[in-house]
Image (cartoon, rainbow, N blue to C red; front, side, top):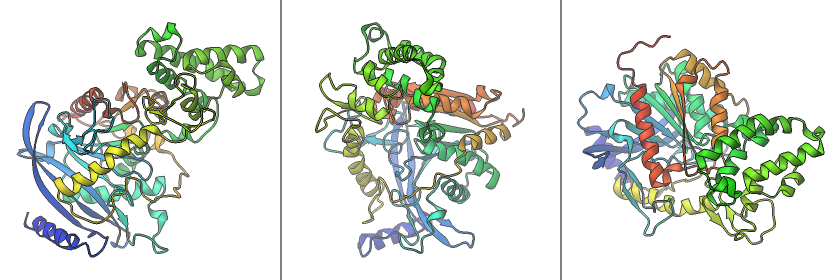
Length: 494
């Protein structure tokens, strides 16, 4: 404890003088707090600081900023779960889930997730800190994390800025973190949002095979599936239709027959049509008959709210950007959001193939940016002139040899304890809920591990937790997932 206090004083002294815009590479600030979560009031400790990334010669090549929450007065810390949280991007700071989902403090926003001034934070009554300790990790160049040196030819970007490099160095960093904090005996869970999905899928095997660290669970929040997102073909082109159905239903843009039903009653229809009719039709490419093409386009219009002619003109392959731009063209002239299609935007002109801007992300940055800067500096006492990178300089990013689906399958096959939960918002147009289902189906082609997967859907978007009703439900789902995957002395065997 004395060492921590000394480091804390050093940080405040060094940074408080504002003589340079740099951080110590290895330091921590510790503060004490109280929370009422899930009806229980308790105290907790927050540690926020930096920890080095070591190279093969034991020299620091980066310093990652993190925030670590532990519930106080726990008799058996080794038996308490540890939840390790990442956001995505790549290049995004670990801010979104930290200050809006699982952490003990959340944004001041309205019940649907829209910004409210004055900006700030409130208590999160639904956080999972009651049952698990949580660490939020900022990868290199995100948040307050930086490479060493920060820029220049001396930085070996190949060690950080690519999907496989990212997985490799983060696994090493986690080894150090778990060792320093004496968490080797704890049940461990990874949670990753968006690009954080493939990140934690890859980490599940990297931690297991290179760090000998075994997990109880992986939680994929609105996961990106690069086998689909960066490829063409019938599946990639068809799989967005159920999302179109959901977003159009929200905006009352579907035919009355569908609009009169509940969302969860119509989505199975759209999913079934996508799998059994649309994908086979698109597989025919230019050799589909005119009659079938027209029939398919009319049905797509029925399930999407788009005009039949527009669908035919695009050879049945409708880009999501076209949907965002044109769904409401004749219904107020608004665009709909990419990451959350409940949000509306206003473009310079009605005609076009894509919106001028992402209305939902603009809205979110209104509240997240001031909140994280205030929270870290004023409530967690991490005083610095260093800029918090909501989105950091990590590009060009190397996406080659992406094989995280197979990494997750191998990790699950080798570790009978490992379970997976997928969480998605129905109105997410970037990493759609049906793509997330498809990803889940494709991880294990044998189907022998399908009972270790679960899917949870919510009536919101990419960050489904911004909507208060879903914030509660989604945290409860994590809580249930952790409780069900605690082994309670059961042997790890088939």
